Length: 324
Picture 1 (spheres, rainbow, N blue to C red):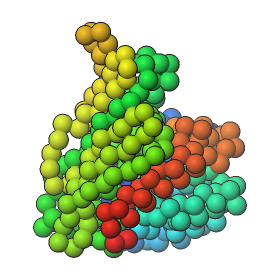
Picture 2 (picture 1 turned 90 degrees about the horizontal axis):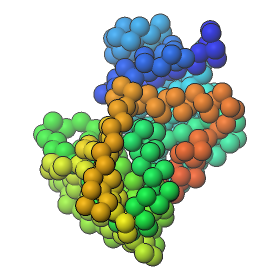
Picture 3 (picture 1 turned 30 degrees about the vertical axis):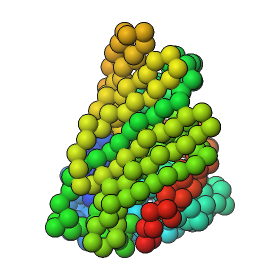
């Protein structure tokens, strides 16, 4: 760890999400951003200057070899997550890897096994799991506030112009709705209801074969989840968890909700829970806690949780015939 018992971060893959994460990292007292890396040294230097980071590298390997870096945040395109996470773990670094952790269940297993082999903390960066609203809603559900949960509705939609190209529409990089944003509603269903007994999924495709929108029904013994992801339409992006005695509605956009409502007996209780920064800070704080406790995984979003979700996504990938 760094001076004053602070935890030193490195970031690789310096796009939009990395910028948002770095901005939130500044808000955490015991966090230091000490190194960033990009294939472009100019991009690395610009990013480093923006966040007062002392080191900028033009290769990921150079950052992995930096003895001052305690934990690496991996925000590169989806197709590189597995190999880069494993390489960072081999180099003795803890790892926070952007979701989805891998494009296949097989690679997800390899990543968690590497964490165990090298005895280093590894977590999929499912930041939504750690925001105050989602943590509190899960507690309310587990307390039986709305009775038995038998319905979850969630979507994540936005319109992206395919003409702009880039990662989102790139088949080689794991583009499309399912892997980029569909994992969010699937995460919520898994968090509230667990592993489904049956999955039905249908998609609308782009000209190059990636899914522009995917609708999913997850069927459980006594419950169902109705989920949707789209990169070619807008939606209200509210989430509803329905039970036998009421329902809970996460504020839109639900994956970064700043509060929620409990509706019971025709009465509504509104709860406000602002996030620290954009919301990425909460997952970084969890990483710090686990590293200080010598844990290689989080109890709130464990290796098994990530593997369960990866297996659900894998089944949908096969059903909708995604090419990766």
